[in-house]
Amino acid sequence: MLEVRFYDIVPDEKLKFAVIAARSAGKWVFCKHRERDTYECPGGHREPGETIEETARRELYEETGAIEFELSPVGVYSVTGKTRVCESGEETFGMLYYAEVRRFGRLPASEMEKVCLFSELPADWTYPLIQPKLIERVIARGF
Image (tube, rainbow, N blue to C red; front, side, top):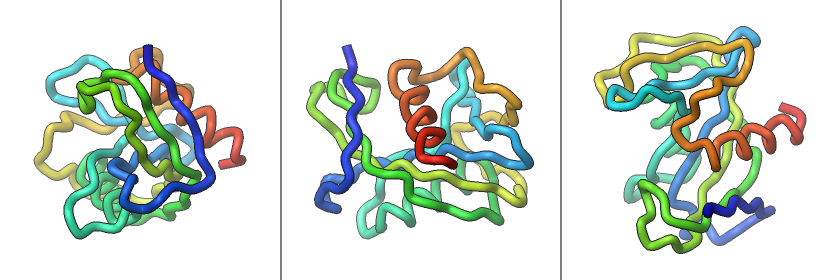
């Protein structure tokens, strides 16, 4: 079983992921991976030398093609338990952001097949035990 927690702050070096809950023109922005039939929030691993905000900006662009957007930090989250990206099950930390996307460019060549805009949240999540909790946090924080 996975456990998702939220923190006010953790040391920067612990932040390994950035996830972005995004909306555009009043609709939720989700990605569909080429190898899956599910939807996910844009996000991914922090690269060496990047700030966590740079990670969020890069991932949002790479996975959605967003070129004009406002990015706001929501807070730190952690996931404990075995996942596709953490087989050890140890607690991993990330920064959750909210983005309001004003304009998309072409979707860069990546693992993402397409970007989908939803009036309601999708039913088929790639990470159903994690991402709905992150979206709930975004909504609870008034974004």
